[in-house]
Length: 444
Image 1: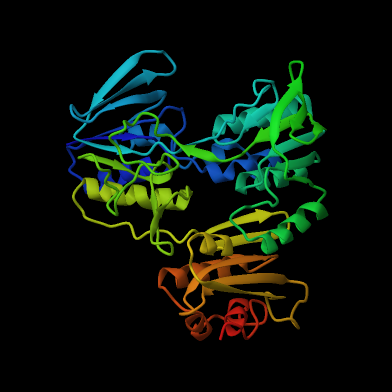
Image 2: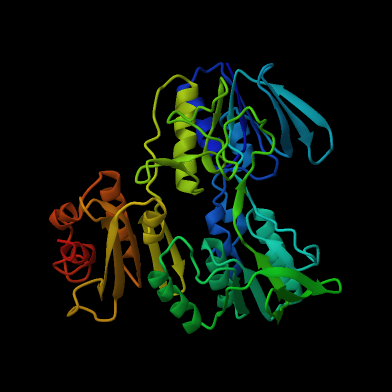
């Protein structure tokens, strides 16, 4: 059996290793990666800028040579797939380093091409010093520009996860940071009242926030020196753009079922609507257990799970993907910022009758150490009291609370069920009533 996998990162290589471990020893596995790096942690890249992660090499889990030499996988780099012929079972494209065309036959195919940064059609985008952050080469370019040109002010367009991580790490090395956000808050997945806590932290750390302005263009001779919005002009020495991502699915035909953002729709077994073609990771749909709908929430954790499950199903070991609940966490200066499930905004969009409760309290026993504050917000169904989502922001213990709430969402628990949980308690870790249970008490 010949397995071809397009994409050499989380989903693709999780699938490849699953096939290698569980398939036949005579199986052939070919992986096609358009870049030159395999299997690395993109989430660690912003921390290279501040030196908290020493080098981009440190985020590489396995170099391509390991897959070739140790595991016998035909792992190719600089192979960009541009066309699929699923009737004749071939993929074709171009070798980006030589310009040579290639074609590979397959028995089963996995599309694990990930996402790319959205690049708006802004005038001046080709000026030096304007960079989008996604891949290892981007990180090297940003670091090289900072080292060579010593910018005093960096403007970040977009206040999402990567934008905030960039803001923190660039501020840490003594550069002034401005964030321009088209809407009225940072971190759109959070409700406005919780986002205010993030705004306060940004201002406390000296990050300039610009809301409700849309970038229109950039000015400069050879290097960017001005950002122009629909309302103002801002002097800057560098611009980092992070306004969203789009699935890398340009090579698939109209015969594939695609979602609203261009993601490939898959079933629980990672199968597409085309025979013997699977998709997994950031380029695929992700079933949301709370929404009970297909969603698009590209995260490394999900990509690794979906890749593993795709690999198992490709070799005949039936395994269904159980879905996501939309869990994420972020460090932003002294704050930890976590969420899972639905926000109020999402519940409203889905026409779910909801209510919410928010508590601000100490993350641990108040008499043990004061000032370790945490804010917990839970969203729940108004009638059944079934938990719909949670947001937690604080200086400690956020990861614990978010993971408890994510587990509760997975099991369709109610706020009363939350109250009944037997959670760990000792003064250095908690109060006798955990903050999420304090919130749950207010729902009864």
